Image (cartoon, rainbow, N blue to C red; front, side, top):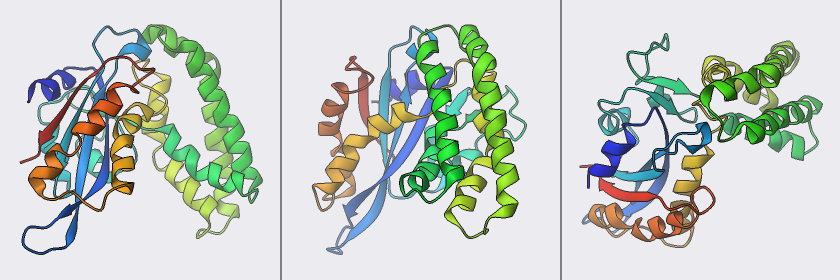
Length: 263
């Protein structure tokens, strides 16, 4: 059962995400909040030949030591959302002796898009429009070598990213610190280093949507069931989700999947 996680950790860049999994607490008759972690590998966006795969781990906590155990020994790029537990695993200087974090632009975009959809912020709308240019570059660079992807990003994306951060830094002092817009701006500016990393490393994706798609079936399961019957049951409750994922992971390509007990 540990083969797939081991293979995933051989990748130059992997993705991680987690979601809640309500689970019946033994002897209590009530549900507790447990967690399902997903770790995915897909080298195809930068022309790699390694097979795409995803592994799941069930845990009764979201504590950082769970992530540390799952990724013990990994040396490479970890692409994630903004959850703080991942930060503790990476060297603060981004050195290549250990794990290097890369950010997910989709997570930042969602915060601005909500304001844009409400038509409540011209800055949010401008942000969404500028970010769209980043994804346009990614579409043309997908499947190319890391160097070719960096070249494409330097030609267009680098200037867009600079414009975005200039816009946010100019705007933040002018809006209420308690506003949703300020919250969205702070989320982005506090993660500038990991957001900009894709500009100089073609192995990095613009977002972590790959692993979000892999974990989405569990989100659907959660909405259609009350809870897992036990910790053991929760460990295997994603077996059906694996079948769903196998048909939907990156344009329907076959993947290797596993559900791994966290204990």
